[in-house]
Image 1 (tube, rainbow, N blue to C red):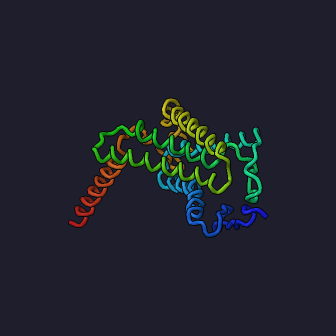
Image 2: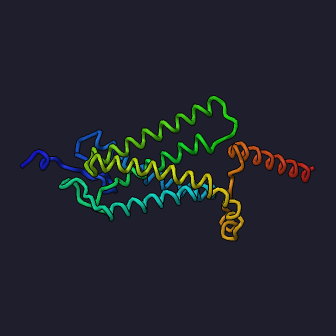
Image 3: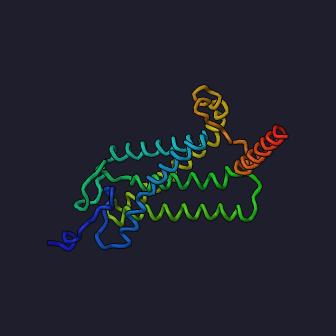
Length: 231
């Protein structure tokens, strides 16, 4: 019996992700493999509370990216590393869905921060952009490495996923910036968008400051009306 056969793989609670029992790094990397799920949940939550059409478009790009990943897997049929894990979902491993997902998300977010966010920036705002880019890069590397470390993918499958995801992320951002954004004002006027209160804040340079100012003005206005009624 080989040493590989003696290794006991333990599933992460409530998931199909397995790591070697007692391996602390393996456990941390197994948890990091859940980042795509956390991101999708965050998307749904953000869309529900903010109703921004740009966020919906971004999520649409993620689904397109996932569809392309599935198409490539079923077309090339390159198997995952053998004899380690039970197969859940698609048995093929090229390209890695996790690395492709994260690199798509990373490239889009970084381009959004450096190109789309154009309002006047303080040195702290600029530092925040660099911080976001660095964090996104580190998380993407961590998630991608976890797929190799936990023996779900080969290095070539992981690197291919990273390259394809980055390319698709840049393409989707360009399409959104150049083409899709021009249709946002038209789309938000549709009855279905008005019903769900979908909005387009593309032309507002600093949405946080705008919402703060609008909220403050409305609050002061209502306070004055209440004061007049009492008097």
